[in-house]
Amino acid sequence: MKLALFPLSAHLLPGGIMPLRIFEPRYQRMVAEAQERAFALCMLDPRQPEAMRNMYPIATRGRIIDFDLLPDGLLGITVLGLDRVRICDLWQESDGLRVGEVELLPPWQTGRLSADQHALAKALQDVFNDYPEYAALYAQPDWEDASWVAQRWLEVLPIPVEQKQWLLAARDNQPALSLLSGLLVASH
Image (tube, rainbow, N blue to C red; front, side):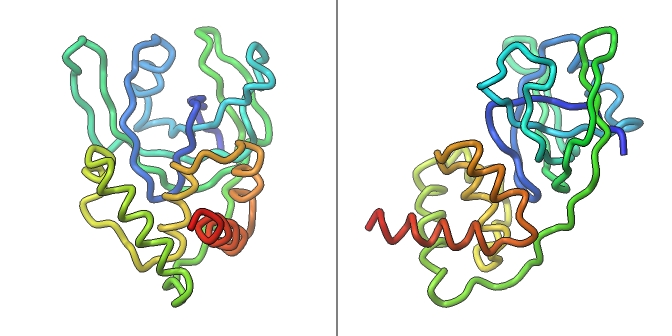
């Protein structure tokens, strides 16, 4: 599958919602072509700031769910994360937009949090309470779903990008849930 690539300094995962400001012409074109050619949100690799391949390989295919003209005159879009993808190859088009050949990764299975993991959902609810603008993005948070909770934590948790990429490449949510549970226990 061929996708336009939008590098960011943050991760968006399946089920996640992220507002973005679009100002560069290549990304304005990406938004304009979003109906014909999907796009993926990729995490920048700070170790290669100038390289064309300065993105980590695990990305998220996204879909625009809202757009607006911002007060500063820029285009604002809201993106919903759909699927995890792995970038297999990439190239750059004449205007600088990078495009990649990607493979879909299987979705993490949904399932209820175990009794000992409910503290993860409670702690994430505290994050939502502390950041109402973030919470407002999610009309119906799924506090019971282990994958949803793990993915929201991975979006906001300040852990090394390499570690996030390793967790995102995992076949299921168990490595993420184990790490998150360990971090929660260590912080209390």
